[in-house]
Length: 622
Ligand code: AGP
Image 1 (spheres, protein in one colour):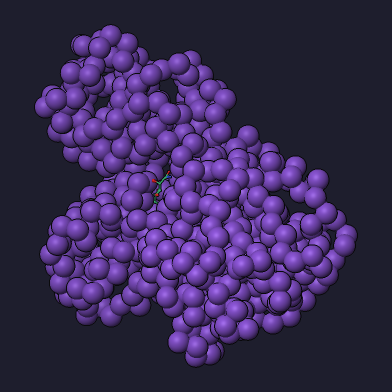
Image 2: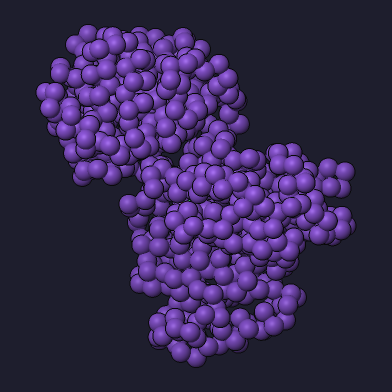
C-alpha cells in the first residue's frame, strides 16, 4: 500500500543528488506497492514546498519540472493508495499543517480518531483542504510544534494521541535539516548512509544507496539528520537497542533484468528461489532450523496447528495442511487471517500458529498473530521480509530468502512459502519423532530435486504462452484439483483474476457435481491439475473422472499432468507436462504453468502486469 520515503543529506545542487531526486528514486522503487497518487515535500528558503499529483509518478515528475521548489537538505515523499477520499491532487500526500503551512507530513495507515481530531483542530482555527485522515495528523504535529518548539517532541506528543495505524513522517520550516518519523502498526525502516540517512516503508526505498538498516519498533519516534539518527519511544525514553542489520538483497534484484515485467522475471527466478529457501537446512543428515527459537518440549506438546494468512499466502498454507497432517499427525486448520479473531477461535498454549506473509506487514495477519499470542499460543512466522513486523512479533521466524518480490501478484514467494512450510512440517516430524531420520532424509532428497524440475517446467513454457495468447479473449476460466491440486487450482484462479481481470474460480474437483458443474457449457476452458498416477490410485482416477465429467458437458480441458501419465490423453484437449515427483511436492511444479498462463495472457491484453488495478502489494490496513 502507501509507499513512504524520507531523506536527510547534504545540500546538493547537482541533478539526481538533490533530496527531491533521492525521494523520487525511492518512490520509483516503491511503485510496486500499488498507488494512485504521489507527492514530495522539501524545505527551501521560502519554506515548505509541496508538489503532488494524482496518477502515476510521471505526472509528479512533470509537475516538478515546472517548479523551482526543489532545494534544501531534506525530503519526504509518498505514493498514496486511497482510503479516505478520492485519489486526486488535493488528497495526495504530503499534507501541510500549521497556520502558515509551515509543516508537511506523509502518512501510511488509518487514523481512527481523525474525525474528532479534525473537529477539535478546526475549532482552533486550523484550515483543512482535503478529505483525508492524514491532514488531521499534519495540523496536530504542527500544533504540538507551536507549543514544544521541537519537532521530535511535537511528533511524540502527536503520535501518542493518535489512534489506529500509522507511519508518519514530518518536516518543518524551523528544522530544515531534520526528518522526524513515528510508527504504530505500520512499517518503517531507516537506511544508514554516510553523511546521509534514509527512511522508507521498506528497504527497497534506499537499497541502491545503502545496505545498512535500522529497525524501528512499535510506538517509536526516530529523528534523522544527514549525520545522526536517534530513537525514542512514545513515553520519551531513549531507545538504545534498535536493531541494526545488513540488507541481503541486491539492488539489481529489484530491476526487471530484461523481462517484460517483474512478474515474468520473478516466475523465472523460482528455481533459485526454492533452492535458496532450502539451502543450508540439512546438517549431519538432520534438518536444522536454527531460527526455530521455540523450545522442542513446547513443539512436542502442540496438539493443533492453525495457519493464518491471506490471499496467495493462504493458498500456500492450504498446501501446508496436507503436508503437516500427513507427516506430523497434528490436526491443522488453515484460516484466512481476517476471519480468525472474529470467530472466537479455540486457541490454547498447545496451539502452534503459523503466520505466512511475504511482506510481513499484512495487517489482517498481524492482528491474527497478536490475537493468537494473547491466547497463549506460540507463533511461527514464515516471511520473506527481514525486519518486518510479523516476524518480529512472532516467537520464531522462518525466512524464505527468495529475494524481493516486486510484482503485486505473488509467484516466487508462493513457492518459497510452500517450501518453507515443508521444512517446518519435516522439522516438527523430526522433533516429535513422527518420521524416522531416513524417511526425512529421503523426503529432503526429493525436495532438493525440485529446483531442477522447476527449471524444466520453465524451459518448456512456450506451449502455455501460446495457449495464453490464443485465449486472451476468454471471459471465464475454471480450475479444478484435488489434494494439493486444490490450493493450486485456487492459486491459478487468483492469479488470473488479479492480473488479467478475467472471471476465474478454483474448485476442489470433487465439489464439482455439488453445484459448480452447472457453470460448464460448450467451450468453457477448464484447467485440471492431475495428481501423480504413482501416488494413491483412487486420487488419480477420481481426477481423471472429473476431467471426463466436464468434457462430456462441452468443456475445453487443459490438463496439467505428470510426464508419462497417458490415462489423461483421451480426455484432454491440451496436456501440459510437469516432471514426476511425490504427490505432495507437485504443488511446487503444477502451479508454474498457471502463473505463466496468467502473466502471458495479461501481457497479451496489454495490461499492467506488475501493478494491477485496485491492488496493493502489501495490505497494511484491515
Ligand atoms: C498475491 O498475488 C496477492 N497479491 C495477495 O493475495 C497476497 O498474497 C496477500 O495480500 C498476502 O500478502 P502477504 O503475503 O504479504 O501477507
